[in-house]
Image 1 (cartoon, rainbow, N blue to C red):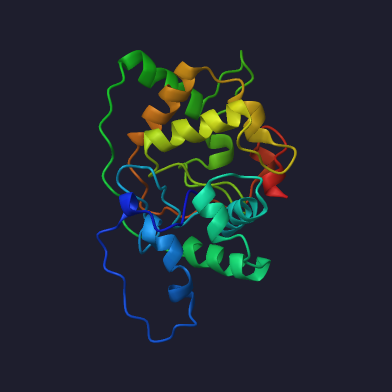
Image 2: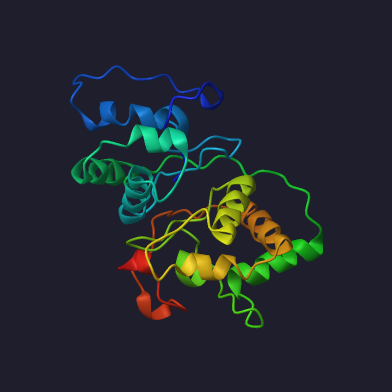
Amino acid sequence: MGACAALPTAAQSDATPAFKEVDSIEARVQGCVTCHGQSGQGTRDGYFPRIAGKPAGYLYNQLVAFRDGTRRYAPMNYLVAYLPDAYLKEMAEHFSKLRPPFSPGEAIALDAAAMNRGQALVLAGDPATGVPPCMACHGVNLTGMEPGIPGLVGLRPTYVVAQLTRWRVGERHATEPDCMKRIATRLSDTDVSAVAGWLSQRTPPANPAPEPSNIVRMPMACGSQR
């Protein structure tokens, strides 16, 4: 989950609706939709990611991390600093149920070798470096897995690169055992770009819902799935 602050550079084209009740979830999430879009579809430049349809547990974990300062992005930290758990859970449930259309994919310049490497890492992993396939945890259709693993379809390559880099350098963390930290530190810069590039070219499936939990299939323990 990215940022939910009212930044001029992230203005959405959707008009802010008029609410029948100020005390409603639609009204409460206006700080979020200012950047992530009225339906959580994200921005076309990829700076603010798609949050619609991601598992509620994942969204809630990110909101708690921003609130408690274990994940750092100043506008998000400020926005949720004083929100209680119940409020954050309500927000997470709201966005997890939304299914807006996906934006068109972004054309990127990657050669065939890089695309092949990205495909291999996502679908089969790399046993030589101890990197499991992304789909083992993020789902066969890369739509995520309940309760705490996000979908990767519909994310812009710049966002994927930024997040993997943050895992690699220790700026982003998750509940231990932090499986993403272990995986990301085994990826080279070239691998990161290849994975992001290949993912960006995937056509979203007709059903973008996350898969049910399947811990047996996961290649390593992951604190986010507890």
